[in-house]
Length: 289
Ligand SMILES: Nc1nc(=O)c2c([nH]1)NC[C@@H]1CN(c3ccc(C(=O)N[C@@H](CCC(=O)O)C(=O)O)cc3)C=[N+]21
Ligand SMILES: [Mg+2]
Image (cartoon, rainbow, N blue to C red; front, top):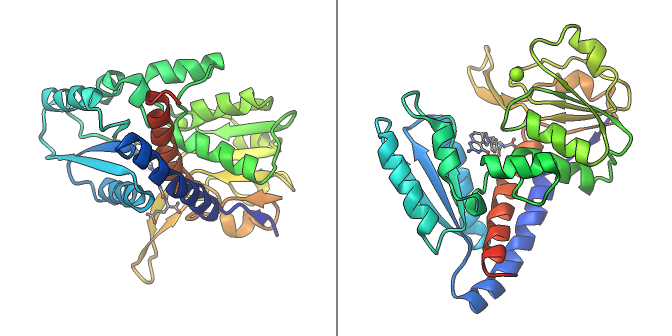
């Protein structure tokens, strides 16, 4: 059986650490770090994520400023809201919950967030810094993956890493982070022929596509580290209950992999934690520490 990479416990540990640090800062600076979450519409999955983020803020003593807008909100209204948050001294991190309703231009809004308040690490300046190997705010999900590897002493240097999925949210930035840690990185995606032949080479295999059971046991090299970034809600036909699964056929792959992240309880909780950490670091930087 593979070693379980417990992102939930690691996330808890990092959040506890932030929770211990924050009161001292509040005492000295007169205010807590603050995160603003912009959400548009009432997509139930987004609403649940946003609630989680706000609850996590509250738990560690960070201020959260929820900005919830109706589904028919205009680009101008949102643009105005971001401009205000950019100026707001209480706000250290700004996040636009994705996906946005179709009529809105999400990229234009992401570009508008001040790069120093870009808690999600999706502003082109921060992505450019990652590409160049400069310091900057790193996107949360890939940063969470790297934290898991580090916490479990799974070194990347010299390893063959295969990232399946090339989104700007996960696949692309994660490939760059693995490369920065001296991995030999391959990016695979929906147009990759014979995906299994590629993934079987991986010492570190990351699935970030959003397709249940995409990675089957025959696609995994024995002993490989398997990181499952997929978050898929599926309904059990018999019970009618919804549950969360990743992109990896966990039940079978767990018998072959050397280490594996579960879903839930793997990468997901780390994403939220990295968002808090990014906001805290922006706060510290702003105060010149
Ligand atoms: N601007 C933006 N930034 C994001 O980072 C972002 C986003 N938009 N839109 C949606 C996706 C998705 N995402 C998740 C965060 C936490 C869990 C998470 O905590 N998952 C738990 C389970 C949660 C549950 O049970 O529903 C787990 O895997 O254990 C999942 C998914 C962030 N996203
Ligand atoms: Mg893709």
